[in-house]
Length: 83
Image 1: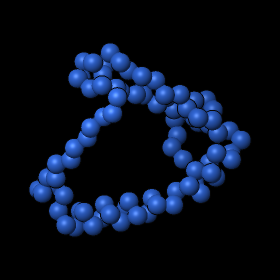
Image 2: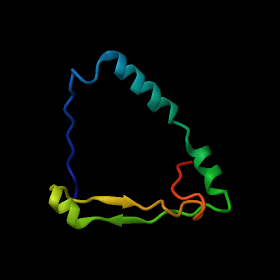
Image 3: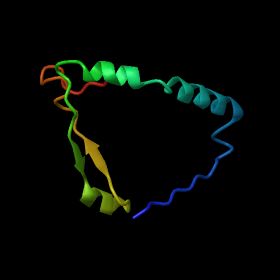
Image 4: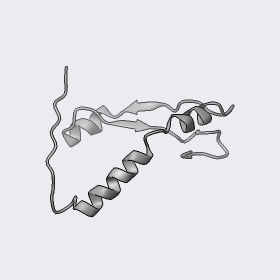
């Protein structure tokens, strides 16, 4: 099954200055692979579980909804943490 996506531009929301700022932010994310490799090299690193929330997705009228459980990220002492 292939999903179809569409985009509607909201000219009141995305003005030229905000579009320029968003473009700059996206450009800064261009070479994040070195950061990912660094974090993956840490001895405490482990991928976190991704759970499906099918009942909630159905109640919201969306096809799929996921929850990433980061409660054990880098051990119990630290808890949820974004590197």
